[in-house]
Image (spheres, rainbow, N blue to C red):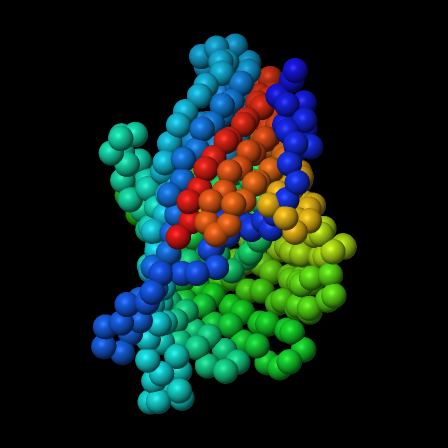
Length: 397
């Protein structure tokens, strides 16, 4: 029986639950008691998780994959299957609820600190990384946030691949330090948001090798913006949005005669209930020099030509949550750089299709199985293909 057939057969073996975004497992109904110190309250949350991952061909990282290596004999070691076990995605966080600041127009002070363990180190001695670290001030119709959190662009996540979230395979956006302002002007469900963020936080691009990240050398933050609209329907929540960003990178020593490069994107997102138990979600985007925003299959600039690499892509997913313990998601993703901007050996297209199954045992235990079929094409080399299975167990508190 093939891997795909095994997954499809197991899908028919269960009946049951509500799902939640791949990066945010469902929380139990009852949370631990808050701790209070002075004017602040601390609410703890997180989960313990173990992933068992098998792939029949080599991706760039078995634990955090973003593409499949070429199967061309000239591209490296012979292709082979692999297996790993790791608890690195286990997470711990603290939500901070502060006082109301009368001196700032009755703003509510709050914050979040969150870590996991996907930051290198030995398998039995993983290194913690901070995921979120921010404070916020909230008024009746607006919020000001300062610190590290998700990019404003590309706000949705596929329900698969819980660490890299299909980055460089169709899904944009990551976490970075930023200052963000969100305005909710009325009761029509419209939201307007803009953010200034650190360029180079993800790819740390240093094209001229002078030890200074090119985004910081430009002495300008990236600018992100999004307009959203939402409405509660009988079948569920309808939400759509349009977004984009601009960023500048500079080098002290010209690269192919160029001393500066632009990074841009424009995209849309949607989450549409199509029935009592079905939801259609996804994103479409186009842009250039997107390596710092998880696009272009991690390729931002063609150094030989001194040109930004354009790319387009997106993802779409149908989720089925019938209301019991079982939930099922199926989708596809693609990241397609412009071939005219690429050099020999570069990654020319990254596409996947996937199936996610989850079985929940409230109030806090989940078992899941993710299957991804992955194809990465190259300029002048054979493509790489991989089937990937991720079996995981999660205890959320």
